Length: 427
Ligand code: ASP
Image 1 (cartoon, rainbow, N blue to C red):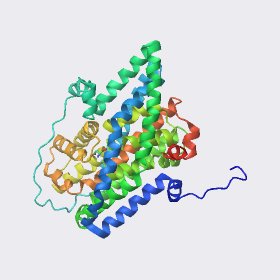
Image 2: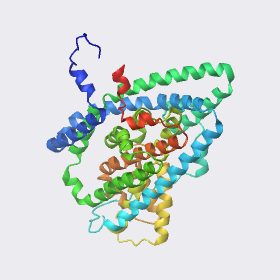
Image 3: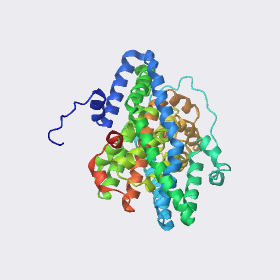
């Protein structure tokens, strides 16, 4: 502050912007919960604000994934490094997912959420068939990249973006011009993301009010034990597994949780990890100091294939259904559930309710009655909130680990506890 200049008092907007984003989002969440519980179903009146926010962040997904991945690949010139990042990412994703489902099974066994629950008039649900691995790989290649973008097929967009980035690297001088253009474009898209994220507290408030108003306590109480088991499992997984992993690479877990908090809250209310992706990327780069190259690759992939929360939920729900219908599961059944739920969570799209559809796959793999899906369906949104948050925090954790091990993590940013809106407010 220079002396002699009169200091202007900040207006209401300046005061609002001075509050850290995560505090505003958290306040939106709590206020939304109160409004929803007080006003019940009529709280749905504010839902359009939430829908507008979701549309705003969804609008960013394709341009953000494409542009940041292309510019990320062009900044990682060494193909061996890209290969290493890919392998580390996949191994960490699979490992954490398998641990998550084991926690889910352990909690499902210890807490027995299905004991004493009346199966009522639940109807059977048609099982979902698992796609073959070969088909899944072939489907990664878009026949038309523009169509892949217009349909929002993130895996195909990732595939095209990586090839496009590699081609830029191989094109010499003309490629350099394109690379510079993409770097500039990436900056513009990040700014656009910051503009949309500015609205997050309002969107989170509206979505929370609507959810709490729609799912009153009456609906939730009979299945309270399932809800408690899933929430407890998600919290344990986030604290123990992620906390220890972050600590193991010499970083402070508290800084990690703070840095990823905005994405976790947005995931909690939107129940879509794909939809939350722009917020997750912004947290990773601006709060956690993860490079564009690593976050541009690890996070979009994670939003579609890494679902620790979904896997954990499937473990709890499989045991819940077994208990409700009095089916005894053998040791082999547990192993089958771990394998199927890991694969099912990879095949689950990062959209609301997708995990419930995949639950039928897990149940049918060990011959559990599919009526179980119908029982869970009544409260699935509430479970989806917790599992989607964990899905997103898990993506952020893996991105942090990979970045740290590759020297792609800016420690000064990670340790500074910066806010994702910092840049927007500085502008
Ligand atoms: N809603 C979850 C997600 O987007 C997927 C699920 O339903 O489990 O991550």
